[in-house]
Length: 189
Image 1 (tube, helix red, strand yellow):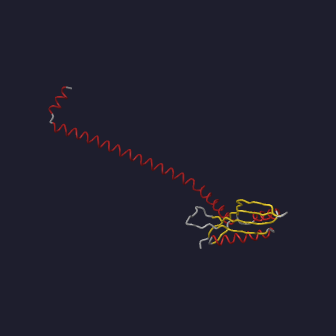
Image 2: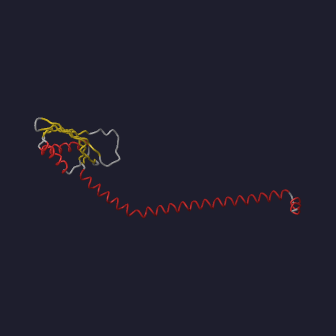
Image 3: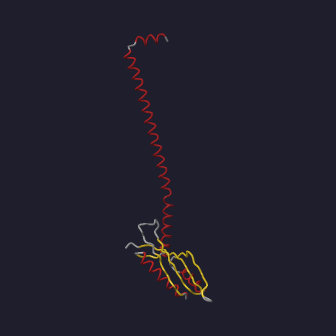
């Protein structure tokens, strides 16, 4: 130990500082190399994770294609049941005419059939179909009302009965109030 202390005292301070600086430089280069290596390992792990996610997604692709085909078939089936036209006014008129025919076939007396076309104040819906509310006021017998509902059910167009009210009128007749929703899609005009 004494010899080391004597050796250090005998060395010039400049050489001692240069040796110390070289040693610190060497340690710093080692630290930077280790950090670069760990960054490369992290990047490789991230790429491997992305690759496994891609492979998993690629493996699910056939099932997703089958599901898309099934959804397309369902969409095509639904399209058959929807009214179609270039404007909501045109479609509401077609709905009104169809309902008028069914009311007449059932033997009911129509008092009013009013489509309620809501103004499209810039709001767009995220779905492919839209709806029109229809208020119907009729008079007739219960059996005629049942015939009308049966015709509505058998029709090739989709309506949803929101509510209905039956009130007695005269001896055998009744007043019938029905709120319907008719569904439609717009064609590109």
